[in-house]
Amino acid sequence: MDLDAGEASAIALAFDFENSVLILDDLKGRKVAEYLKLRYSGTFGLILRAKKEGIIKHVRPVLEKIRMTDFRFNEKLFEIIIEESGE
Image (cartoon, rainbow, N blue to C red; front, side, top):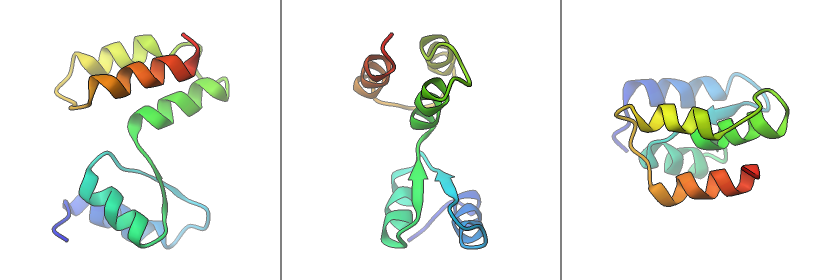
């Protein structure tokens, strides 16, 4: 697979740290991580986890800030994360 250099490096580094969780938003990177049986999460999943663990109080303001950038995501995912966060 033709991976971005950063994703390839992150995947390689994950083998050096037991119980690591990769943060991958690119589908190619996720497929490689899955094939290699590595744990991964996307940015939105990480934000949801931060809310559930009490690190942040609200998900919506964080997602709204992301929405104002060039970060590409599915609007359905946005709504799912809002719903799962209880907001």
